Image (cartoon, rainbow, N blue to C red):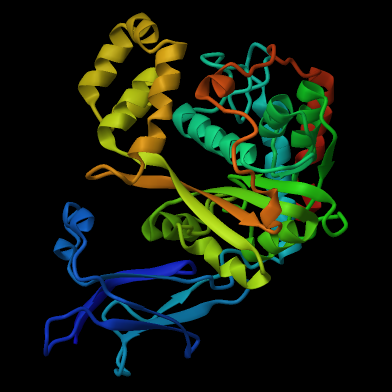
Length: 429
């Protein structure tokens, strides 16, 4: 038997394996602490992987896992079916993501988030620097990668337009941007929740939303208390995403709508290895949420965010961020630095909206184009799905949604930042 294991992590293993006698792909088995936990068949050929030099894509395998992230280490081994010998590169002992309890890890994450949404989220001019593009198209004062953020929000709002609902709970809502947009578009009652109390305060100040700071693993709501529960770019950060999804399904009366990133095993494994606080510590693909059909729901997953080099460059030119454009085209980045006014004129609001809407046509459908995100709908009530959308949601609806620049009270922020700092006795042990 020939083969090699290239990545071993809590979220999956990947590599290549082939049967010696027939030179055909093999069935691989994954063991955790000596127990068989998953298996998968190697592919015959992956042309997309061939472009990246991964053994010409032949006999490549990826086996998703969902191993506990702690607090104990786990020995993971990979073998071919019918063999007791591990493949080269295995076994590997995976250290826990953290040796702390979940409560301790959550507390540290909450402090980090509180600092980010308090003084850590205010620029030198006193304007709040938002997680989402709350100030509208080219309003600035927000985190970069606007292409991804706009496309995610647009797909989420289109999914909501296909559902019948009067109330919406946004779990992991940060400063309340998506909950407020849903209220604006659909006239529904909304609540924005987050692990961070400071994020909730910003949602109250900016959008006058009802909020609640909470733990997604244990939502303080009764069964079926909200028509729709949304978690957008949230569960990739939490310790136990399966428990989080089950909690959201418990609280939802009609549907749960989730968006998550789609990254490679290698990317997620590296994030886990670094122990990056609030990093993307889980792997998701278009099949991940099928596992929840055992709970009696219908599961539908859609790809989003086209991973296409040319399209990506155009959207970065739209965003006007030369640093982000450099890895794709240094020449384009130089032109962007020399004449930013020209690119802003070319990629105006209308052109940018039409460009962003092409994502739906390109994602996963053009040569060399994959996807970087997943939108999943877990439908509890089949009657909640509309035969026609309640309204057409266009990208302009997203780009035009904005609030005035927000300047939080510096005294309040200073007190919140101080409260978010770790206790001295805690940091010294």
